[in-house]
Image 1 (tube, rainbow, N blue to C red):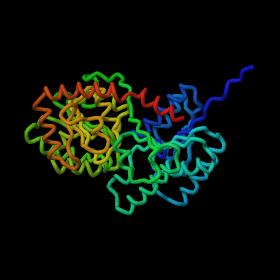
Image 2 (tube, rainbow, N blue to C red):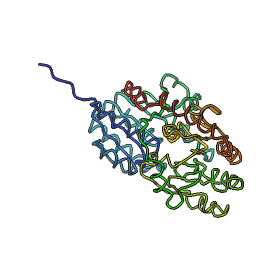
Image 3 (cartoon, one colour):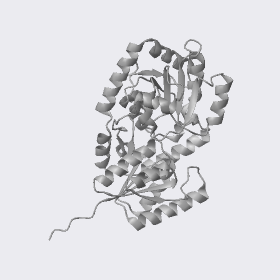
Image 4 (tube, rainbow, N blue to C red):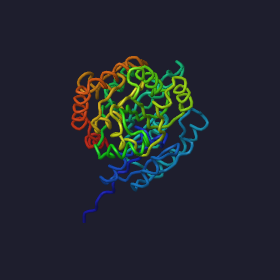
Length: 375
């Protein structure tokens, strides 16, 4: 009598369960793994909307309360114990770690508990962020340890892989698997504008989907609008997203007299479905592994202006399917916006070329297939 083998168990782990690029990645993989017949659990530290989405999709979740983002040795030792106990309880065949803290603590716990396959996905390196030198050094140690303790490290861009070329004895551990998206339907333009811009639905709109976080450099977009408004007073900037920088950005908007021209719209559920509200998509981050929002803008066939950092040039080729600008450079951003506003043929051409590139080379199905081969 044939007895079918039990499904392979996969444990995903992430520090914060809010909704960002890393969380979307975990959601896509966990749901696809469950659909493919794996026994799936997602462990998280700080709660957020990822948990609600996973539960709605029928994916089991577990809270590890001590797993916080900040480095606190007392809590981190507790988190290690929580990890070990839970791993021994469910005995996963694969543990797939995401984010800095879950990566290093989870890798040690998985090694200690004897998990056969330990996969760590690098969604970016914290030492690339604007931090004091001592913190950059600490994070190099943390990330290097995560890589060395893991069976395989997935880098979401070639740039992310290059950032770790200094780490010895690790060359064979890396796999580059680009983030991928599945282009879905968008809210129709008139309806989207009615929801996000009530009473002000006409005119050209520059859009961003971004956490209001220092790394995203929203202030550079606001300064660019201060320049642009002198020659194009009817253009507006709308930012979908929330975060710790809201008070500082609101102050800057008032100081520049842009209260009617820059709108911080706050968190919008499924924000990417409203991309048709925009005429141009802008991304001003100072550090990026491979931005999901740029792929989503490509799905929506929008012309994109983005900073030439991290893995973004792997999506955008300047002058071919978008415009690249230096980071920290509002003058360059304003010039790029002026170009696309005044040369609509370039905008249309770039948008069409980016859409084709995203559909052809950044599919979610390919990302999932390549990742599951590592399980």
